[in-house]
Length: 184
Image 1 (cartoon, helix red, strand yellow):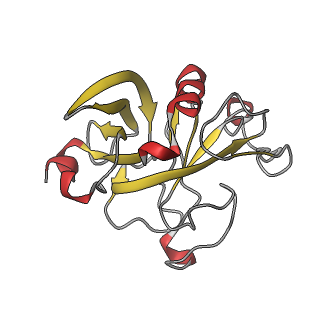
Image 2 (cartoon, rainbow, N blue to C red):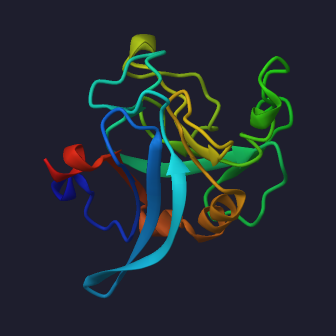
């Protein structure tokens, strides 16, 4: 995966799961200081209910494995001081009324993971360059205590920290997958 990280990247959000079929993971933020990488925070996280996939498909309830840039943020709540472009929109980020109450705050804050999306657009932009069957709408968002439909979820304190820390000038990326896939 190191070979897939773009030159000039100075911030890496690493998300690694325990196993290919596990929804449990850890998110670690690394920042480049000179020639070395320093850990700058670690939080428990969740990924897809059915784990990870190197061949993500719409509706598979797995999180795509890979290296993806992070360029856009948004949410239901006001901008908490994000360095990434932030779109606040109460209607666009409102969870469906029929979702379980535990999920009602999932999209209070989101960071779009640039998997099958156009960077530089709102996180909720439905454009899918690889086609609808490859899925999309993969975000970092607030945790609700269990696996997601394909996103990565973290505690609110982690989301606020990431929003205030991830800087477009540092060309942030997310490197994510189960431990075995990341080692390959």
